Amino acid sequence: MKPDIKNKKENLEEEYQRPPLREEIEKFFREAKMVISFVALGVAVFSLITIRDSVARIIQTIVQFVVKLANSIAVEFLKLLEILAEFLKNHPEKVNGAIYTTLLLVLCYYLITLSLTSRYYIYKRFRIGHFSKMMWSGIAGLIVQLFIFGFSVYFGVVVFVVLVDLVLVFILFKNLTHLKKIRPSLSRPLTKQENEKRSCLINGLYAISAPYKLGYSNSLDWERIAENMARLALISDVYPEELDKIFFREYLSDYSVYQSIEAVYNSLFKNEDLYPIYYAKAEQATKKMQYMSELIVLQRFIFLDYFE
Image (cartoon, rainbow, N blue to C red; front, side):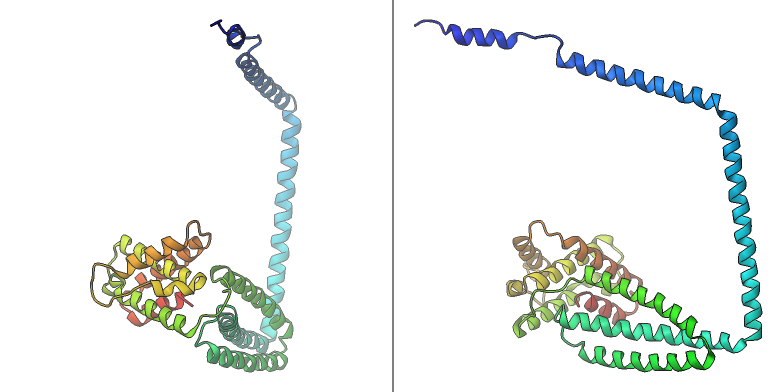
């Protein structure tokens, strides 16, 4: 059998190194980069030394301009305050009107927020039990708005009311946008059986979560509660048909509700983008519950409100 001269030739050619090597080229460019950096630094230092007097004059001019501008603004602001104080002194009824309408505007903002939040829960998250709150808070908000209109005309503070209204509308829009982000709309309403199962699981998780009821401060306990709140909420929002796979037992057993919630969650979700949002919201809820360890009623309200 003849030796494979062709393969031997190719192997010898593979061992050849044709200069310049890649390592040599990369070394040169690193050295060149270092030299250029030092040269640039030297030029910059030399330039600063050369024009230091000009730079100092420019900086001094800028500082003087800023100081004069600040003094001018301060003087004009003080003049404005004097004018405002004089106006309020001569028109005390407008002060009273501004106070009354501000209080009514805050109340109206609260009522409208309740109404719009309940409306979002009903028509976008398909939650039951919010219709009366939506209607009564909306009606009360409209009535308060009529009082605001009357007070603003009577006391002559219409412009003030319009400005405050614009600020409150902006805050309302911002809060509703945040609400939609942390409580996404659902794809479909739940069936009667799914709603009953969901309610049973939420109440069961509340009953079995002993740490917050006993006032424990172990961070791991609270973290575990937040994790299971987030998992149960995510399952009921995204896969409500899978709620029947979660088993809850009132008494202690080898198969706890935590394990079953975790098992069902792990089988349904692999890389879920919504989990960090749900967990952050659950973490905020558990922190509020820790501060209210003596107020069981408020703790239960915070816990149940998380699942809306």
